[in-house]
Length: 217
Image 1 (tube, rainbow, N blue to C red):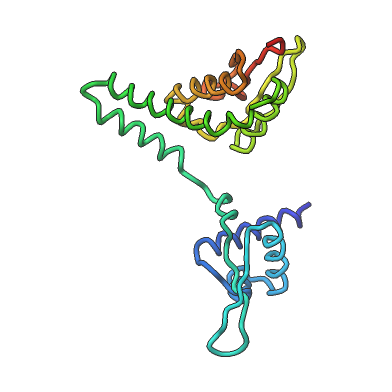
Image 2 (image 1 turned 180 degrees about the vertical axis):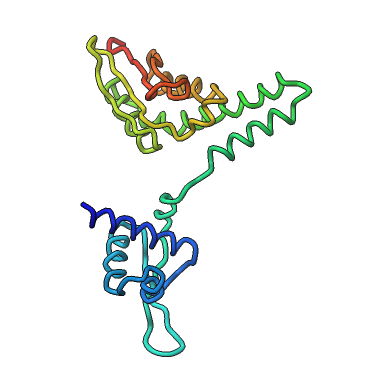
């Protein structure tokens, strides 16, 4: 178990080195990590298999061509992002620009969230066409999981459907702007074509977001 943890930790360092220093040779990585080149190749092979690293042959001024390793686009997901803070700052800036007329600022924020909901509806509505409620719920669960919400579909004791979201990629935004939660609820109602009730909300201190959908509709 300890060896597996050490290997994972070393691969994280490899990714960080490639992120901060760009393309590197095996020898350069081995020198930075203070491990053998054979050990470096083993880690690189695993990272290549996982689609996080790619190699290309580069000609040197002296000697034979060498393999240079660099990160793939997929590897970018393994580094911290600050998108929530950026979005929050932009929304707050929008409100501050209308400080003399708070209602106008709120109206603009509302329009932004409504516009996002309309865009998502246009994107996902075709996937619901010709499907019954159960099939639409399965489709919605897949959509939300793909978008990072860690969605899970279950059924309650009364037979109603329960859609759980164990993660919210925009929690910080939703804490300040409840429009995010309201628009998600409205989107679900339109995509499913039935009533949807939110019974638990992460942004309001819940352990997850849970939506109840009556099975009779």
